[in-house]
Length: 485
Image 1 (tube, rainbow, N blue to C red):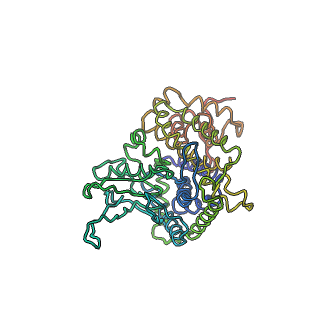
Image 2 (cartoon, rainbow, N blue to C red):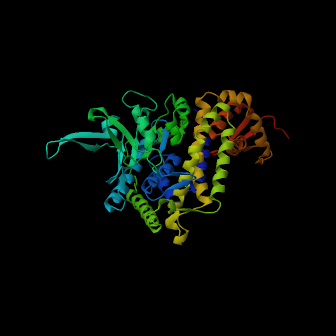
Image 3 (tube, rainbow, N blue to C red):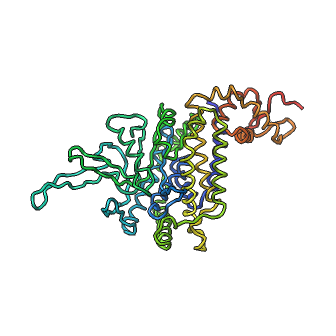
């Protein structure tokens, strides 16, 4: 194992994580920092986790207009990452916070009862960790009972998917998306359905039950998806063919072996010791409840119209357009096969970016003293949201470049070596010997080629014989072979 490669990769990774984190709202940065105490190097999933929670608890008070369509604020997250690299420990941080905030909301009783099909019913917030995929468990059914006159009547028994909160998959690979079976393939349809916008009726799950004279059972699930899995072998095919993943914010990281090696060493170093971990659950329950209450009051102050809870500042649409063009430029610079698949995600990603911009504005509201300036979605909120969404679609493109086996053809048809030479020539030499920081070279090539960090780094390893490397402490310096004065 190349320890120099390990350290330099980690150094660049951590530099990027710091720059990414600094752009987020304060409460998100704090949440992220504490989550990373238990789930090392998972900066993006930590930030997304906060927005999954926030989007869920304000969904009844905020609607996001997009022309003729109206979106709710829910963020559906699918985290695909190598086993043993922090997914379950992240859930161990997120789960008690979600349970705490849901309990407070339920006890307050301020959430409006929802009226569906002329039936008013409370939808309490809770978590549903999916393990059983039968219809009876997921969407419910009817019990046959006798009324006072001896007549048979059907009594509705709701399924566990019904209600608000999180639908958590710890092993999303068994959801039916990656490994369809006769028992779980219907769950794909249910998942697709409840992820539809809540502003309409297309999110209701319905099923005709043969054993009850084809009586139609409706399941009213307003949950947010929080799904985790390791990268299955057929992931690229699923990404290309299954529309359900296009509805979710995907974060994909096939963790390099040297990072896994580092994580294992840290775990070994803690073996036999007792470590007190500060889990500030109550702090984030209180912070989220404060955001919930501020949003509820803003909603009520504006006639209980969810379309009027937030407003949009001048420049909001321009900022969205700018980020869309950045996304297109990034995707268009990839192989045609990759570009074709990635483009299928563009519309959904822009919708997620818009919703997350709204949530960034809400997250910042307690820090804004002038109440009239709160709940205004500004260009800076778009940039904050984009810092997350950009990380996610770059991992998607990187996976497609590898998983669809087009990377080799891409390198053959458009070598990155001339880009390395160009960037090297543009960098200020640190001394008369012509050395530059390796991390500066890598970052420069990423910016010039618009390719992901992993793609550029792997390509560098294939041409590293063209550079002379020198180390001082943790830093690595490189010089192009043949670069003589």
